[in-house]
Length: 230
Length: 124
Image 1: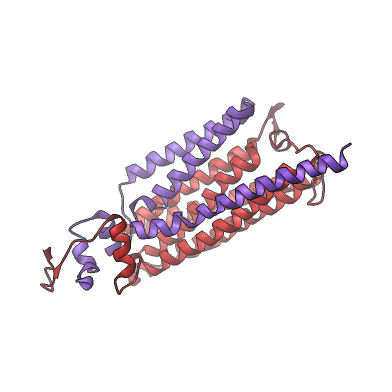
Image 2: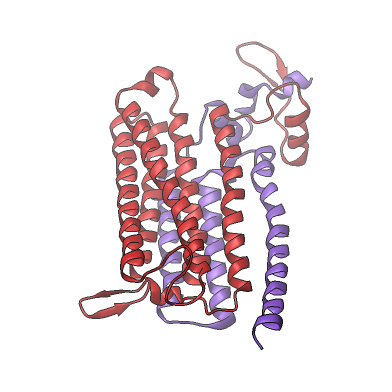
């Protein structure tokens, strides 16, 4: 038991573990002691998890069930740089870019809570810029695949037709998320710069935007492992 | 008494997650983020090396999945702050995706079955 300094009301300590879960749910109050925007973002990301898993699971299903040879991603996505043939080069660079952007995003959230307006905005813009370069590389990759390799959603010269449909669906939907994230982060960054969150009294919106951005990176981890490396 | 349990200012004296929640957010030393950032780079390079050196078979799949789960775990727990959230929120985030394992298992079985039927009827 502790005394609340301002009210003098006696309060027991906050319960942890399963007892805490029970208390959080049963008490006559909101179940999650987080800003509502954060709780809603988590619910959205949860639904997005199901969508991406459905895409990846259908990719798994068609890859298992096809009797044709699956095109070797290591070869399909190889680049020749200065006469050297390097497998998956562009994809490796894109992976590094997305991880770098996740780092800058985490720092932006941190500086946001320190109320450092300029550093927060600068890091948010850096994150968005890295996102733009990621989408640019993806556009380059798609162009190369469509124009040079002749990959279509309904077929390709290298093997199983399902390769194209899975590839365009999964990376396209992910690219759409990155594009949306770039717009989202730019809006938040402009608001940080204008002092909007200082007036509002909280920088939690930066953290909520961060959740979305880290999720986009998280999805890429699975796409990179299951589509490109498998 | 129930009313008292929810008094967030009272939580401040007791637990770090409740404290940050009371202030509306998560604040942690930058050092943690930099370490995780570095680890993510290392794991990414490792998984790229699996392909670069053309490891094949069970070793390839094991390494890919291990590096994938390590990266996903660090992103979710540290970058997305799940490690510092209360258990009620953790359960909401982490338990529903487990049902997806059932979907994945069913679709893998279904895929194998379709493959065998195709082999049996088309490839003679």
